[in-house]
View 1: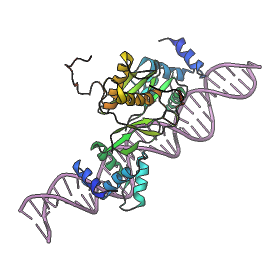
View 2 (view 1 turned 90 degrees about the vertical axis):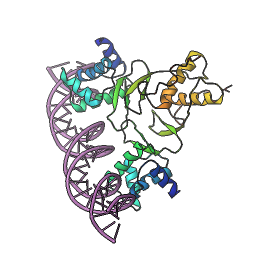
View 3 (view 1 turned 90 degrees about the horizontal axis):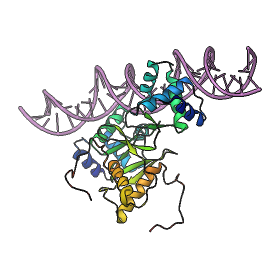
View 4 (view 1 turned 180 degrees about the horizontal axis):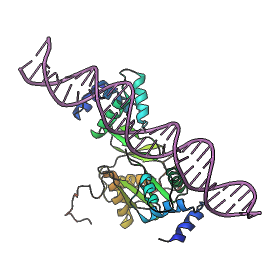
Length: 145
Length: 145
DNA sequence: ATATCACATTAGATATAGTCTAAATTTGTC
DNA sequence: GACAAATTTAGACTATATCTAATGTGATAT
């Protein structure tokens, strides 16, 4: 993991690169599993430098405000976090609650060509409310022009 | 508000129509403001029949399980609920956190005509992450073919 | 170098949201 | 009405997150 890159990204957002803040950011960049604050707190405290619970929450708040980290709310569960590396969306499966990353699509215009198709695929996920794993594989054998 | 309709809708989902459960459902159908559990609890207890906090939560859980009510998670805030009258999505503004209903679109296919345009408008909201009120009114004077 | 000051961190208390428990009550059915 | 199952209840409990006030740290000016 590129230490300097993280440092630059923090300072570029006006945040001091403290050991605790760095640890949170580094953990989020190494693990794209959308951990909870508690999981991040535990993980950070398995190695030096240690961080208190309040600091972990403070730093998560700061990182979210700075736009480096994204917070995802899931019904009935603790909030989850991830590093905003590539810009992307979160699709939360209505059935299993899993958070699935969705490719970012910057300029939604009247659809035509492959851009339009990508938008529509993502809409289908959102509109259906089930992730790729849970969705019934309808029309699997039908070819799409 | 149609008392019998609510009763039928509850019993059609295998739920007894108790006074407390009815009160929660009726409140959600009368107010489409996506209230929190606490707001629902308070509102129900301003009139008879009274309901305890646990019962309010129990009934919300039951109604969500039965598919009559939808729960919406919002980052850093209490969950919000609404009656699933017409099928719709929830768009949560990144800036103000407001929950905005979004028209349901049942069959997303390669876009053409007005259906495609509607899909794309909703995608634009989702992708931009700002609600109608907060979004910069870009291209306001440009006509769209 | 060191005084200073804003920013960060800390432990623990507190707040908020939601769930659990066990007893009492209500509801539908015989 | 008697019964069983579902529901409600108050309050204890758990989980998640924030606040507080004291302490520590690092950059800058002197």
